Length: 112
Length: 115
Image 1: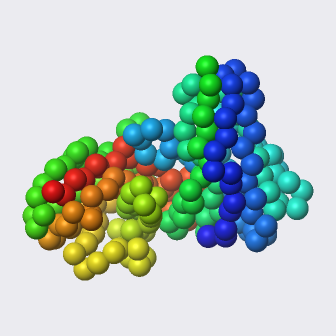
Image 2: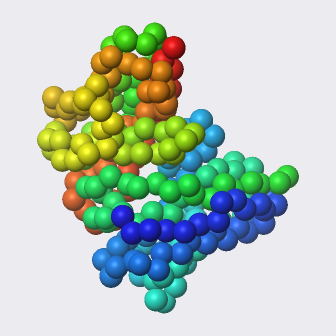
């Protein structure tokens, strides 16, 4: 998997938007960008993925830079339940048929 | 639709004993993955299967670890003999086969403690 760089931790207030950055300067043209999160005492949970265009789903939005060397996961209105470790991953084969390499991720703290 | 089911949720056993962890992937998913999570090393891929065939076991730490997938709906991860340093949370995940961008779905994990 191509290498990604994320801040170790971020803090935000409840009901405010959160922007979680990820740098992936060695990304190749066919690498998808995946985001997972892990809530305390649970397994990782898929959040969103994209290739070139920005993506939205019920959980979050993914903004991908035009040169694809960075991306931002956007939680539009954070709740206490969004407190988790967020992982930005570039799977080797797109995400399905190969294992994932998890880095340290970003520990998101939500203040009430 | 049921997610990935792992059992047991917790296992405490003494050093030297055989440990078997079980996983039932999501029906229709052709790829199955075993991961291990510790404070020191984070989440690591141990092995993965595609259509019940082991594809990459380079993450298996030692010969004491073995994994099987006898059919599309069941997989086991076995440690024999177990050692205290094997204490960790073991996760199983599954995904549809070979489709670009398909996410992996994780179970709730088995928390293993070797005394």
